[in-house]
Length: 289
Ligand SMILES: C[S@@+](CC[C@H](N)C(=O)[O-])C[C@H]1O[C@@H](n2cnc3c(N)ncnc32)[C@H](O)[C@@H]1O
Figure (cartoon, rainbow, N blue to C red):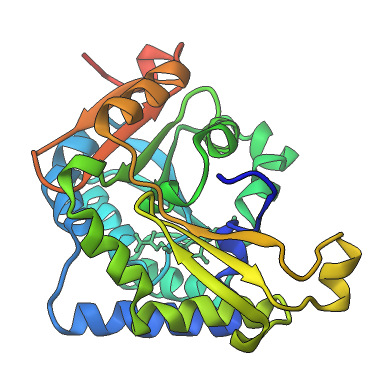
């Protein structure tokens, strides 16, 4: 990150009610066209193998279900494997919690939505006292965070017997300039503008946009609101506005192995998934290799 850039990349700022509606519209249009992401296809392929690694009874804590396409795949696989699953979607957006609840109802799975940020749930004492086995699902939302920021959060949420499924698009597996153009596209601008509005800004308040090959979006402010000025921001300041990090697979592996026990699901495609567990996870709860 360039020096003096303020970090406003937290995805929670993207999913204001207007941002969530815009995201849901884009995601639903894709599903209606039968366009499934590489992540969705990978989840479909690995879910039976994933279920074989989970205990008979577990809680699925879904961090950010979105329109719940991927959550539906995991829940369906749990039902097919006759697991006793309790579903806990966590989201800052009620719209997405409703999507998650609908899918759970359709599958007859008990659902206990939590309207909250991931950060607040990680500090929740009630959750921390619950000793049930957990599968935490974060998926590609993982790439919106710096690993040092999100790893402690998922560690706290999965607890000592849990596992977390994250996914990523390794840098060398994707056409980076194509991904960058997607972020620059008119379609994605709808989401970026919704985030500007959530901060009290409009596109006219932005002097310039920068889209990098690391898949980071920076904005330089032409003017600031009173609230931003109180934080110390001034016209001309640069904000890290959004990120969807594409690290090389070697770097991802290093970050994962540094903090977790890793099971990697890699079918050679543009998306990989990683099942992360506490280093000293309790063997009897996950019948593992
Ligand atoms: C990119 S969408 C991912 C959707 C879904 N996981 C999928 O696979 O399509 C990100 C989701 O995470 C939620 N979200 C992002 N950051 C959050 C945070 N810090 N706390 C709570 N919800 C968050 C958003 O509201 C949204 O539902």
